[in-house]
Amino acid sequence: MTDSTRFSPRAVLRARQAWLVVLALWGVMILRTPDDWHFPDNLNLPIHETGHLVFAWGGDILHVLGGTILQLVFPLAVAITFHRRQDGVGTATGLWWLGQSQVNVARYVADARAQELPLVGGGEHDWSFLLATWDMLDADLAIARAIRLTAALTMVIAIWHGWRTLHLPVRPAEGS
Image (cartoon, rainbow, N blue to C red; front, side):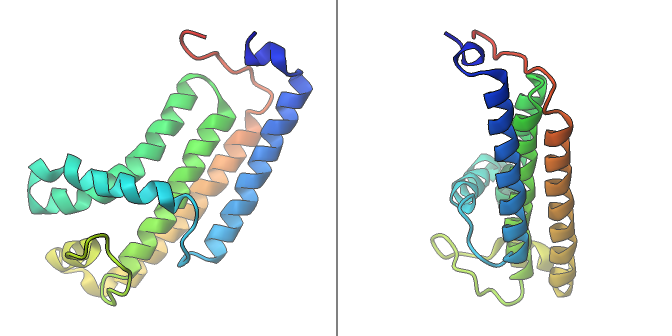
């Protein structure tokens, strides 16, 4: 029995609508409290730290930037995977996560001069190093504001896309 025969189309639609409402409300809460730790950050942190390992081969800048790169690429890959299945709500979820992750990155960038955030294992602050290297350390707060704006737009686009595609059929995953 597949998921499509286990639940009525109306029940599936209602569940998908409810999920988008949850994401929208959760996004508003996250955007209103951008300096707080939010549940998805428990996923973002290990992905970020893995990014440093994945990009360690590329020299100091790529090694340090690799954490943020993977932290942003991972939810984007989730969105692309669902998009290929023509699952608009799944795509929206990946895009929403990308926006949430951008909020997390903005918090880190905004801390570049203050360096008040606790760092995993101590060490050097990624964004303090990067912005100092690029002679942009005094722009940390402005850059963080721009990233937060991008995050908000990404979340809005995610929810809009999810609602726009609610009634479209979802292509089953390979092997289903």
